[in-house]
Image (cartoon, rainbow, N blue to C red; front, side, top):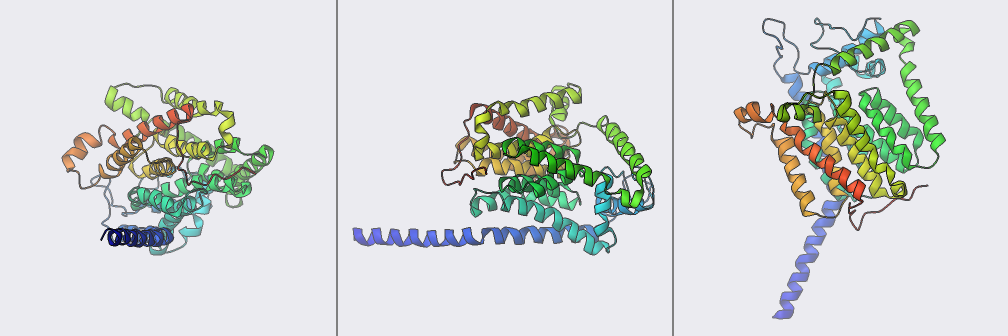
Length: 413
């Protein structure tokens, strides 16, 4: 009887292991399908949604107004207009990205909105998918969990037709390509992220970890300059110079107008402190750079992954314009940080709290009066990214992170 019981237990384990192997082999395919599906669903919601009225008595705008801003930025660019002015006949609010982004959006601008919006959502979703998929050293199962952890925040971003999935994907892609010594493409990804949102330039920190520094600097300068001047083909030199001046003026004005779901916002809402944004950002930058004192750790893949996570979190929690749809960038950083390490009870608690406070706190599962009177005024969504970034900083400085034992550690070439 005992032998029969043991045999039955072994068969059950074999059965479970079989299902686990099937899940591991198909997990990324399932997540890929989920990312495509939410892209199409979010586009349909935008196209079928009621028009929005931002100010009572003023005309209504489409439910996918951000996409319309991007779309018309290209037309305004080629028409020789100042793309950083209001165009109330076309869309609500200002265009705040670079002339380069406006030029590239021309690939979608000429399409009917029903097609262009789906493609825009897919670009955001699949860029993030590709970035996580190409991360070396992690199993497909781990990558699938990271992508699933980001799913709700990605949906939130593409429902608002924003570029945050693309931003997160470009940064992770830049890291993954650098790990494969594809510096030409890696530098392109970081340069593209900069010309979407300037905080993307923080990802250039990765290049401290790799050999061939002159090649890295060369490709970085090449792409930054080329992408900067590329719009000249439709604007001319004088107009392009004017547009960069107008963009800089807009960014400076925009910086003084808000604190966002950030460290600055938490200091203001929780402690009633109004501190210089520049001072907070500088302090955050110094703390971000401090772990670089461990020069010998640069060859440690886990240390480099910690910096990838830190970058993705830093550009949200020290961003004066961080808003709810931007947090897919932060959740990508949290997911990478948690799933590359050994199972740890404290880290698991932080991960679960991050899921509930970031993704669930703003959902309809939370009563509206709690969201309006507590979650939003106190910037609850920003709390766990700040806490986890501080833990990452501690782990980097103390070297107490614990990569999973099965994780492959790519050697630098």
